[in-house]
Image (tube, rainbow over the protein chains, first blue to last red):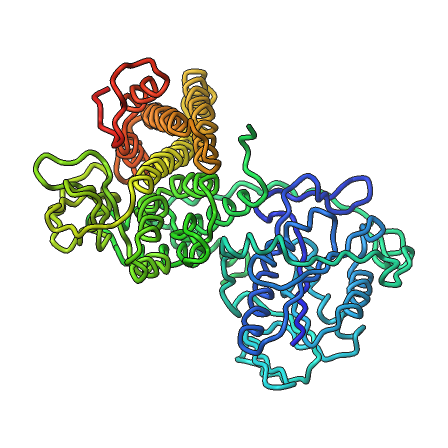
Length: 259
Length: 348
């Protein structure tokens, strides 16, 4: 089975993330990048499917040259090869453009199954899986917390407020997974050393038949008009218990419509 | 000589750092103390074995990873930083390579590499009463020891627990007469001692960095006269000195790892310089950081002591600073008495 996992390098969520005032895009140089945590579950699930059903796992990422670290990490976990789409013209691409560019890469790699994390921790749109499926004209089975492959059928389970949805589709398909699905493995020392020798394809936009005008900030369908820093958190209110602490807290909760 | 880690070594370090941050918080270090939940330790070691920690220095054909001592140093700085309460140095530097070097121990080697069996070691000076003290004695099933007849492997089943300063690295006393011979040549044993010495120095660097980090965090929070105490020069300068000691010793430890990895003819000098500097740094950092805390660092409820007591124990292990300074002097031709192969403790 030809499994492609889409991963993204994002700023460490533990650090303070900022937008650049020049073009309102994320300042990726100011902070350390690492693999979007939610994508680790996608990589892990791909490796498990490969271990159970055979095949090959390809890592696909779009991002600046520093995203090579994220590719290497996914390869050290056990993926077989990678495609790194990197071009300055892609800078500032929105979800529509990103899904278009990834569609072109998938045309090159081919696929039976495309796996994504539920969303990126930086942009947090969570729409890429749906956009990709639409562009590719294949089924989308999203937000899976369990995936089963049976021949050319994929069955997933999705947690809902009232129980589970069980969704079935035929391959090829695009699936997105949530963090409850598995526990991502740590790469091994052997995996780290082996990752260096695994092939990483770096096609140019021309190789993919993408015109630079079709991607990037200038042609983006969405625009960041303005942004502002979040206001500092206000000081909490301390309730001194003088025998009436319980009712004071109840009053507070009632004023916020919690009770 | 380039002292920074290369890309592979950084990846290994980051992996181990993240794994230990997840799996070995101070609560797990406490689990190894008397009365703690020892069962918390096994899954940590399994995960470390899963990524290839025990076989780091073992040849790939024998199931290891086949890496060298520069990687070992990067790994053990992190296990030290976490205060990992397991015989990592004994396994990585001594047990796994020696079992791999002995022809009839394939089965035991496989169990060590998979994390199923923990082996300790005691390679210091031979005892006078026919017994030795094995660190982590309550956790390991057997230990590699030096007996009057040569290197041996002794079961820890009949070992007697001994009161220990670091409760997460408890000693157990075992009778050398119960040991069975382990057939490895002198060269392999010398290398094991050198690796264990550098490995212990690397753990001391990690422990020192941890103690400093805990203290910096504390002095930024603790206020006096309305400002954080870390703003006062009396604290600032002490902690700057502590950092200086660590930054001075750290490259020497990396250098010693590099010397072992490249078969440097003067490796023994580097090993002794590394252990002397790391032992001194860790001892002084422990002292300084306790003082900068005030009374809280004396309590067992506060985490600092978990790292300070390990540092004091490891500063004495495989030769303390004074012993290595003497040895280094001998190796440089500054002393006439010949340095002994096994490292004796010397009173400072």
